[in-house]
Length: 303
Picture 1 (cartoon, rainbow, N blue to C red):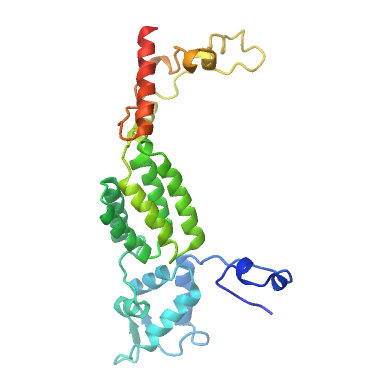
Picture 2 (picture 1 turned 120 degrees about the vertical axis):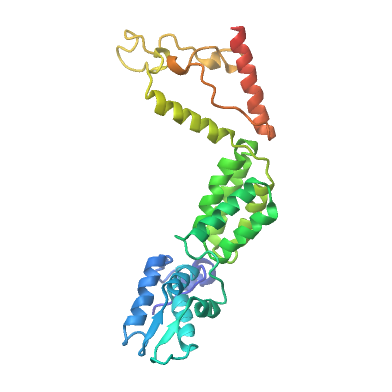
């Protein structure tokens, strides 16, 4: 006996039965796999339709994307679209995007994952969250949720948590990862609930891009100067002969000094005065980092 369920069998199947069966988890199909299966149904008269059907390419993209890897749902939707469409003068049932949308009772809004519209919505979402417009953020997120596009949402929200909120509210990144993990486990439609929480959190959080700008400046200097020599006192000294070569000899262990800080050079000579991190002071955490940096700079002046 073979059975299938959309429920979690570890919750919904009686333990006595579960202990006597082998459980296999079926992963959602990719968009391309769903497309291929739909094309087979259209082209195979023995296992598909026994009359001519033409499915427009945008309608195929729409159904393959909007059914979220569920081939059964894709077949049922295609079947409904075909059977509710009359033959034209040539005896062909022509399925357009509009017909497909009506069959699924959903819109094409952002289904084309490779099209400009899709990236426009993602861009608008990020810019709305960056601009702290919570209502616009929810609107654009709703369009992606309606499209069932959790992967794009997850990637963009994770980027935003670090790029746009950053050190002004580091907890936002933790909340984002947790919420997205919950959303992926839940799947739609319930996934919209943790997504709503994190979108509101990110939109109304204080914003700072100081961390990623600092890294970009460091990368820029790396491209400009290449791999500069590491100061000898910072080089590895845990091998025979290191001391004779002057490796790590003059290194000062910061924890042995007051406030766990000692004035010594860490950057290569050519960029020893580089100043990459410039805090925005937008949140308590970043203000604390700023205060620490100012204290260190003052100590350097006194040394």
